[in-house]
Length: 114
Image (cartoon, rainbow, N blue to C red; front, side):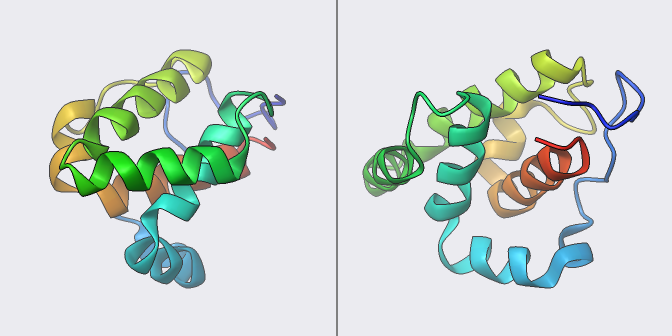
């Protein structure tokens, strides 16, 4: 993964900048598992397919455990780019602001050239 000269330890967008990319926001709002699948495929460098990750996220969401899967990959993204767990914890974002969090993760990967 390349970094496109973005500063280490700093998010490139804010959590609530969802509408910066309105098509991503709408897609994630109606089909969050699709965007999660894309994020997972990038973070796992292709070892987990987008389709497999999407199905797993959907299945976990049906039993109200999708936040666990989302939190795992948000933490992985933060570790790769040394990002702060801010403005809220990974758990809180994955539970309560999942669409905004997923959009932020996707934008972060896109901005950093992944």
